[in-house]
Image (tube, rainbow, N blue to C red; front, top):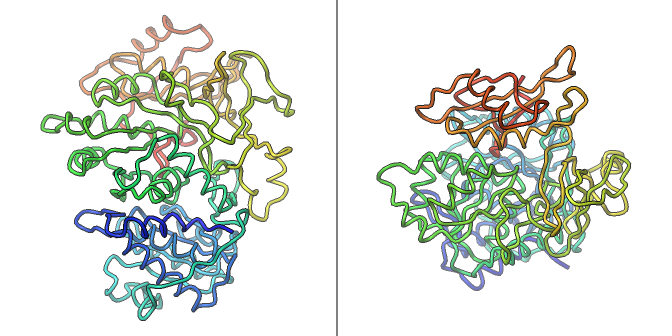
Amino acid sequence: MLNLSVFLEDSARHYPERAAVVLGDQRMSYAQVDAAANQIANLLVSRGIRPGDKVALSCPNVPYFPVVYYGILKAGAVVVPLNVLLKGREIAYHLADSQAKAYFCFQGTAELPMGAEGHAGFGRTDGCEHFFLITADPAAASPIEGAETLGQALAGQSPVFETVLAAETDPAVILYTSGTTGQAKGAELSHSNLVLNALTCNRLFQSRPGTDTHLLVLPLFHSFGSTVNMNAGFSSAATLVLMPRFEAAGAVKLLESEDVTFFAGVPTMYWGLLNALSEGVDVERIARNMRIAVSGGSSLPVEIIKEVRTRLGVQILEGYGLSETSPVATFSDPDSEPRPGSIGIPIWGVEVKLIDPEWNTVEGEDEIGEIAIRGHNIMRGYYNRPEATAEVMNNGWFRTGDLGRRDKDGFYYIVDRAKDMIIRGGFNVYPREIEEVLMTHEGVSLAAVIGVPHPSHGEEIKAYVIRKAGATVTEEELVAWSREQMASYKYPRIVAFVDALPMTATGKLLKRELS
C-alpha cells in the first residue's frame, strides 16, 4: 500500500518547523502545509468524494497548490492538474474527459481570470458536482456569484486526517498532454510511478534532507515542476521558493536573496537568467550557493551551457522525459564528465532504445531513431483511451515521438521531434542542429527553425532570430554566414528577426505558431 502524500507527511513528521513553501513574505512550515492538506481531505470526504474519484485543480505556483494537491491524494482521490491558461470551453472538456467530481480553481487576476473561466467551464459540465474557488485571501467574500470559496468550505474542517492508502499501481495523477495534435489526452500515472521518479531524482541530485532550497519557476501543473521540484523537494524536506510566473530579473533576485541551492528550468529560462545578470547583482553569492542546476523540456544550446558554467560556476545537468514517463527517463550522469548537448543515460530502473516506425530496434553508434522507453516510470495509459494507448505502447515500451541518437558510451542525444523534422529536397534536416549553429553567431541570442512550403524542394528552411542587444546583423549577412557553416541543404534561406518567440506556459518554444 502506498500514497504519494507520504512525502509531505514524512517531512512534516521529521522537520515540522522547517519552511516548506515561501511566497514573498508568506512562509508555511511543513507542519502547517500538512495540517492544511488534512483539512482539504476532510472537506472532500464530507462532500462524498471517494477513493479513486477524480478532482481537478487549476492553480499557479502559490502555497495553495501543494496544500490542495496533497489533500486530494490524502483522501484517496486522483489529482487532475489543469493548465492555468485554459479557457472555459477547454476546462469543460478536461473536466468531462477526466470525469472529475470536484474542481478547485484559483481566483486569478484581471489579466488572467482563472476563477471566472474555471466557473464557466464547471457550469458546462454535468458530472462535476463541486466547485471551490480559491481566493488569495481565504476570508474574502466570493467575487463570483454562486461560487463557494475554499475559505467558506474549510470552516470547521479538522486539521487531522488518516490518509487513505492505495495499491502502488492505483492512479494518483492524470496529467493532460499539451494536445499539439488533436485533443489533449490524460496520461494516468500511478502512486509508484511518481514516488519512484521523485526518489530517483533525489538520488541523482544527491539531495540532502532538510538543507536544500529550490527556486520553483516551473508551473506546478506540469510534470517537470510537480515531480522534480515539488514531489522530490517535499520528499527531502527542501524549502520551495515559489514564483507564480517566471520573470528573469525577479528570479535572479530570488536566487540571490533566498540563497537558492537548486534551480530547474527549461532552456529559455536559462537564457533569460543570463540576460538578467546585470550590474548590482551579487553573482558571486548566487554561484556560491547554487549546487544543482537542471534543465529539461528541450535540448540546451551548448552556448548557454558554457555561459552558465562560466558566470555561475555550475554545470547544468540535462534530463529528458515526458508527462507519460512521470516525467524523468534519462539524466546526466553526475559521476561522469559533462557532455554538453546530451540528455544523459537511462535513470535507475529504466530502459531506453531507438526504434524505427515499425518498432524495430535501431542499432549502431549515432544512428537516428525514435526514442522508446520502458520501466517503472511509464504511465498506466491514456485515461479511457485504449486505442490511443495502443498506438504508443508495445510490450511495455512507450514510443515518445522524439528522434535521438546514442554515442559509443551509451549517452543519448535529442535530434528533434519527429514531427518537426524538415524534408528539403529529399534530405532530412533537423531544426535543433541548425538552431545550435545559429546561436554560435555573435549577433544571435535565440533562434527557432521551421520548415515552410516550397514549390520545388517540398520544404524550405526558415529561421526566426532574436538578436543580441546592440547587434545589427542582417538577413543577408546571416544567410551568407550560415552557408559557410552548414551543408548546402541545411542552411536557412529565410531569416526573420523578431523581438520575442511564442512559448508555452512551461517555457517551451511553440513552433506551431510560427509560419
